[in-house]
Length: 208
Image (tube, rainbow, N blue to C red; front, side, top):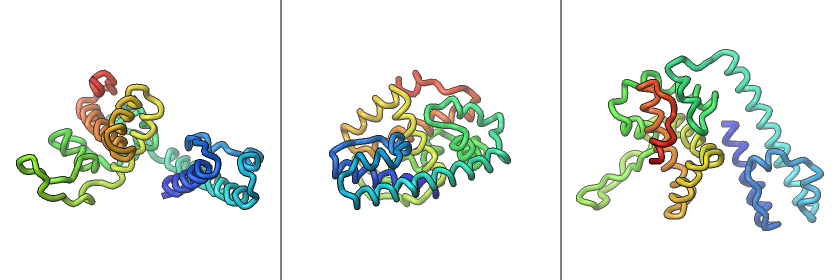
């Protein structure tokens, strides 16, 4: 919840900078803005006031997130069956813990496709004879796993060159949200086999 609220504030400030200054700063840069930089960024005192308050909210949310994460990490740790997750681009301790706690026993999913569907990373359309016949319930599955894999895809697209190329190729054909969901879908299938077979992440197999 706090991560989503911080992201909302970052996107709001990002949009305002783009509208007013024609500049595009990534979210990771915005988190590091200080008040003197904001004062140089905007000429209008009211925009400076708004931007400073948004930054104050971003910093506060960041401190709350760190406090909660520290409390979680003090009590919870990844089981051996899930430690392979940390070899996946975009998945760190918190996302790894989220996946572990929501998945339970990966063997309850017969196929990788079943797991991807449970993570809400597949299209909910019903197709018959090549034509769309309707949509299934988009709320089926696990919303926490859906969030975790979208977050992982977002980070992977920023940090891994092959994931970035895949993401950009998909984005050229659709939009950013669908491209991120497509990458998340690939990550769900990769991690399914990693958890089931206890093997590390294989970049070559994912993007072959």
